[in-house]
Image (tube, rainbow, N blue to C red; front, top):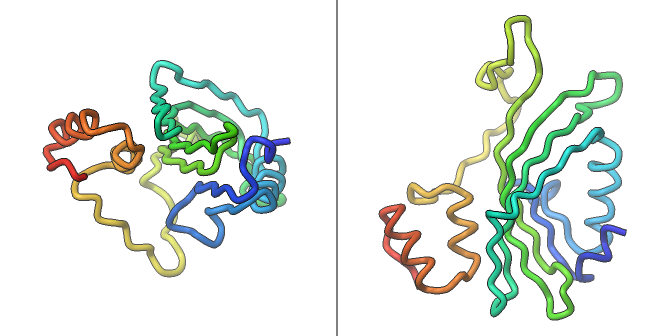
Length: 171
């Protein structure tokens, strides 16, 4: 049923720097992600939409939304479930019929695992294996700022964002 919310050629971007496993295209890609990841690897999902942070531009049919989610995730077979919490912002573009043609997520996560002495320090992770991905240059802006900037909210909103961030507005 989730795919009914999306156009047939929609794009769902969960992790933009992982195009092979983080960008899902069309109904089949979104359905596969939903079944293999959400239904199979997440449970006890608590979701809270932050309506006061909703921004919608009717002219471009673009919305920026914000929500919090807390759930348990399975790191793999035979391993214990981990409790995680996310604060997410997403940019959604809608087709003329009201279905989503683009969903692009930006999020911050917090580990809720308990260690012997309280919450585990997320900086105390094991070293990564394999090549490290190069982070994009955002000119001092955050990913959320970039999402808002590209949401086509009009010249006055962009100018205000540029003044707050200290950058020059782009056309």
